[in-house]
Length: 181
Image (tube, rainbow, N blue to C red):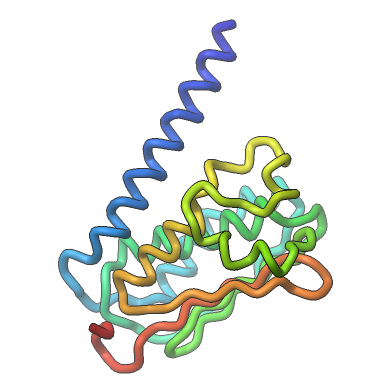
């Protein structure tokens, strides 16, 4: 009974943390400052290594130049993309992370996601129908947080179902030194 209560409390804490992060992303970046998306991506990839190893998933990371924005929110964006890519993968799968001057792309080799479900994955509390049944996968806020943080930076997000399974999530950043808008 005690363990069940502790587990329930941990789930509630994760849900509250995710909702607070979603609200921060929706509120926007308070102060834009230079940051290195490559460094943020490397740090979050290092943080995700143990999770990837636990799920027998390989992380492959390529990174670029400094940008302007909210480094803490961008770390949340990258961290959510990596955690989702690992958790919604298959044992022995791969997560590919690519950063260019204006984009971040995360691709995994997880289960197939029906094309008609892809667009709704950025909505709060939404996951693919088949993915909802996989225990312990989170609250369904990860990609909505990604989208909110991207919007706060003037960026756009895309999701594409891979033909052999998994997703490719793209975040396209505005050209130049400052965010759009």
